[in-house]
Image (cartoon, rainbow, N blue to C red):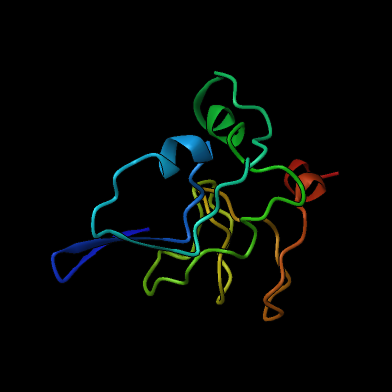
Length: 116
């Protein structure tokens, strides 16, 4: 999430990988908090077509970005693939993993998305 506040930039709750690239930058007065520098373990980041190509950049099971996002009012209620977003903290990234309504927890969705 990138927001401009008081002539300064804030990078909060982002996955910045590889860490060597981002820690070497001159951030100036930019505020950085709650960011992640670990490998998001993308499922299969190889070129494909349409939504299948984007799904390759979903995070692997047990990734640290699950439930680590920031809730944003009027967020549209859906992730990139049309899955419902929770009323609490969403996952970082384009895809929300399955969650139990009103429980605030996420579940690995490898089985949920493909219907098995």
